Length: 324
Image 1 (tube, rainbow, N blue to C red):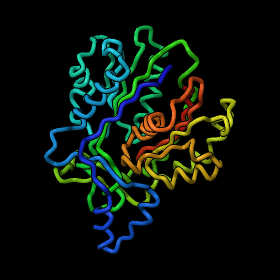
Image 2 (cartoon, rainbow, N blue to C red):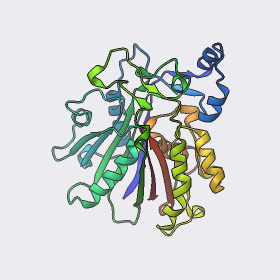
Image 3 (cartoon, one colour):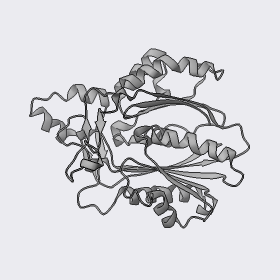
Image 4 (tube, rainbow, N blue to C red):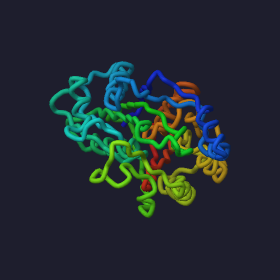
């Protein structure tokens, strides 16, 4: 199984976070601690007058990865759209993408919303589906979010954290030993009411609702999960931390990443962090880290081992071993 083709699409409008930081500082809210924990300078934002949507960005990312990989849409047997902010519930947006790309009839299309662990779960699912399918050989996964329209501008965490963007990658079945080696999930649903949209559910939704983000949820539980289970997870796959060539961690918080780096004494150059430059992109963030690392640092070689750790609201976390 191959994961070699990726594409990042974002709006033209970039916002520097300095003005937002000053806005909160004027209210005597210290932003330095939050800035140090998250690590953000810039974000891409769809402005109120923008014609783009979550769906249109997803289509652009899909076209981009097909074009750059020289893959025909007729080769794609699965289209998965990963989003927390879909344009449509009926039909699912993956059907809209299939139409826009002129996909072939015998294509599986579905949307998935697992919040920020969505792309991780999609990669797990499509790898297993392709492995068991006699007809499907390539899957197209598109992650797209327009979170700026539902985040609270007066919450000092969310006001300068997220980017509107889209990201696409292709998973291809082949005869090599590359691909998914193992995956582990961890769910602690006691945090189910800490990050909420709509705040009281769709039955009570108002047009001006914004996401509730309780300060109790900072992702630290998922860090504890990684600290507790990473060594065991690697050992059951006959690997050590030293044998991992690249660590792709959730880009939500540089503080969380540094905690894991320090605990396992990881070489920082093996743990890329790019959310400072592009903002936090949600479910695609560990895969965007792969994309940026290969674009800016080096291309991975076949047979190298990748360890992915990420999390989603509620909360759910996961560890994945992938052989490149």
